[in-house]
Image 1 (tube, rainbow, N blue to C red):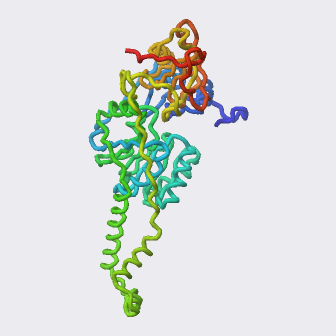
Image 2: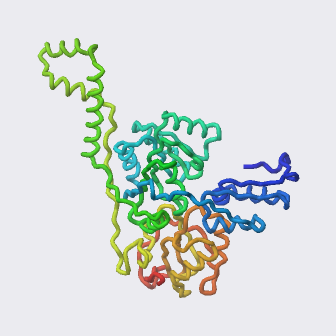
Image 3: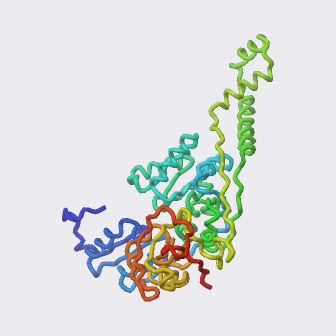
Length: 431
């Protein structure tokens, strides 16, 4: 953050202003500083914004600060699907740690990036994986530039095998040994997904992208498949038998390597034990158990919960009814309350249209809608700038402003009698 009151920054003679990573700088908590810098920049100074991704709502913000802007898009010579195998793992939040640990153990990983949504999640996952014996390090906005460069250098030199990173921190990262990208948390939009999985499979090399998603996130998965033009392959997680078989194979190679190198210094001890009457096979079993004592225990893996399709259509598919919000929000989504409901005659399509038009976001990015008698609750992508939310709040539906505000209720109440003022009402998705 810039301390403006010191008066130490003078922009009067500035001839050019360059903003890198414009989408994230304008989406996160830097927007006020960016606005101040732009406002103090001479009007005749050249302004250039760079961004790997440019969602519609961010592009509208960019256009406010540029004069007669020219948009230059650099087309990639190869498409994402050509050299990156994309897989999807159906796993709920509580089972993700065990899932990623199993994948990192069984997959032929040279180096991997695991993308998480928040700094806190980055720190927590590094600690959890390190405790399981994974050579992991974190890369988030909490690191200063020198520590970031040191972490990347360790990754390049093989001193770190798994990098846990937030989207912003991993931008511009080019490490040839990265074979796997794992999306621990689903990205905010399909464009970000396409860009991030490009951390592997670079310069003609092949790579593997694995995305964790619950059954309630089918719509988001569809967006990403559409963006890359490639269908994700369902990837079953290794079960306990597969983990044990893999560990046996790894230990087998270790034993063969030890026999090749020779272990004459241990011969006298073994011969002594045999002379004492111990069976050779039993001795070998005892030595193997001692050598493998540090192997991490195999945790239990919870099966993902499948949701029953509703009568009006299957959840997450176009044309299906929007479900009542009776559980936690979908991953990457935040719930907001709007001031119109059934008593105003509002329909889901009206809400989607108003929010999409005013907020400048795609209607497909708007999640579940629960219309009640006096109000409605809508799921929107987390991290929307306050300026976007303010514009949405001014939108009018059924002659009334939406007055959008974050819904902090832990969960939606179950269905109640119709004479209850907030009872939910059945409605169908817009055509």
